[in-house]
Image (cartoon, rainbow, N blue to C red):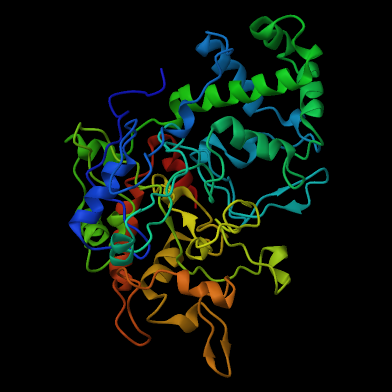
Length: 444
């Protein structure tokens, strides 16, 4: 069973938006319909939208999902699968922190000596894994319509750049990445699995001679990890105060209600245009993301060692980790775009945005509403003025969103929220924290 509980069908009434985001209802409706996983659906020459990323399982997988998930859980928490012997999946995706990082490091450390930086901030694994659609970019075939409406941004896929379409593909990356678990090959992972305390369970599920075929053993380990992440209820508890509020079981405080109103106000915060916060038509609870890609112009982060090279840029869809988009002719508008994360449990985090530049929710929100009104707070200043959007090459800075509120304002103008209103929004965002991680907020 792929979906869980009465909240499984996250069909939200909120509409995804392109970058730049159109304000027309017609376009929003077209994009929403194009995002539904209906086979053979074409709209205005668009390619049919794909199925959900987590739905693909091999025919050869054993029909014992509970046992497979139990094995996957042991693999998820096993540090012996890393070159250092100190890193498991749970090291960076800590369940006590909503399967996000347990600290405020901009990027986590890994590698054989635990001294190599990752490239991006670690996202939470909670909620989105079983509802993330395949990476897809709708294409408008009609050139007149394309000229009128612009090019829509991509949506879906796993990771900040959406380059993985299944959880097993995503799980393979940290196992083999030199700055994470740092295994030299799938065969090395299989050898470690053969020595693991749960090797007997592995053989019971996949056959007594499974380790004679290291490639197959490795593939089955990835399948077990995927099944654990899909089936274990800890990945999608839906037990925050906001969930209770949506079900009429709790009331928001005055401050929380003010924060929600500011969050929803399209002329001010405009947060809900991407972080959808209303029930779906079927009563399903929202995931607080539309899975779409956006360029916010987050400042360059000197904490990331790679950024000491002035020629290095993390351009999201255009690399360096994703390599299939930059070479596509006519797609330069995708460079610098990163996927919109869920805001569930955002108040439990100690690091924000793809490069981990900000270390408090308050500062992240201040940047969001004062990026353009007070750019000198965030960006370097040269003799010619403020160098905005300095974490992208100069010719890609035009991809940053400057047409959606509150990103439309000019230097010296009033920001969308006052400091007091930011505190109200923080109060609302805290209602998105699940009960089991509320203690993490209180400890900060």
